[in-house]
Image 1 (cartoon, rainbow, N blue to C red):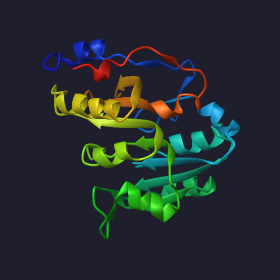
Image 2 (image 1 turned 90 degrees about the vertical axis):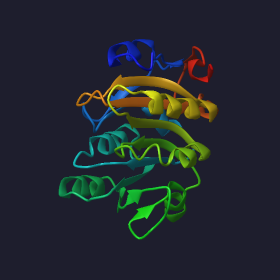
Image 3 (image 1 turned 60 degrees about the horizontal axis):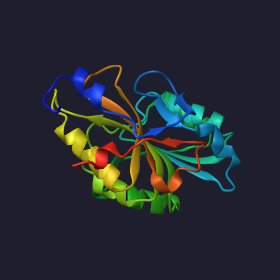
Image 4 (image 1 turned 30 degrees about the vertical axis):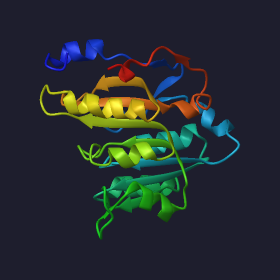
Length: 218
């Protein structure tokens, strides 16, 4: 199916877990993401950690997840450029807003996820929202080696070639992640939004129903 049109591709790409508490957090479009069980986070016995890579001018996910979790999470927002509106909104909810680029290496104007976590004094990430315009492939090895429970990622692919996209999903599966949700980006068929949950965190976001491990097939 990799060489077919986008309509057939999305007909055969199937979720591996059913999340009855799947909710849209943030606006329709690039700013918002589909997330499993965010309302259960306030019941955790420790503070949660949320990282958001790629804010642009829309902080709707960050402001809404702060409300849903009753302000009980450390929120770290990263983008290559700071805009006035997100700066004001993120400051209002006490989020850390960092102007840099997420990269496989740390330089004067870029940082690895590992170094960012050290800087923020975090040893895990409960929720990762990532929209970094294709750089998700360059940092895949690092992302899948870290302690991240749930991630919502915008994956990019050139035209109708889904090979790189599928390779990324298979690497995620090999690292212990289940595909919970996917949808075509509302603005472009060259972007696919995916929600993934790590197998070590299946009891933390409400009741889940495992279906199958499609992405681990050869």
